[in-house]
Amino acid sequence: MSAFSALSLALGARTTGQAAQQRQQQALVRYLQQVPRADAAWAVYLLAGGKSRPAATLGLMRELACD
Image 1 (cartoon, rainbow, N blue to C red):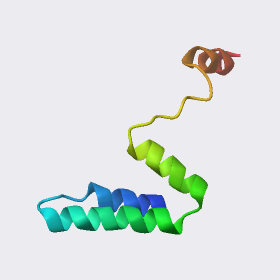
Image 2 (tube, helix red, strand yellow; image 1 turned 120 degrees about the vertical axis):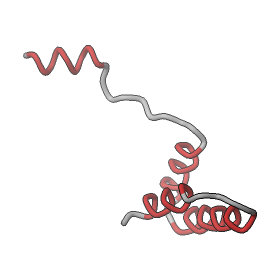
Image 3 (cartoon, helix red, strand yellow; image 1 turned 90 degrees about the horizontal axis):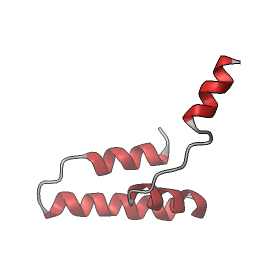
Image 4 (spheres, rainbow, N blue to C red; image 1 turned 90 degrees about the vertical axis):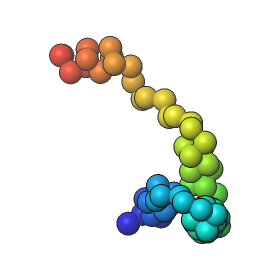
């Protein structure tokens, strides 16, 4: 399992109480300390709600598929 997948599972777990929130924070800190800086930057971006842009527009993909 990739490190980001493991982090996603840890963050997606139910959070009832302060102890659970602390476990999630610890999982995030561990992840950010263990992965390369570029991976950490992407994780922060995605977890903060960022979205990557598509490589091509839907219209272009449709045009290429029909050729």
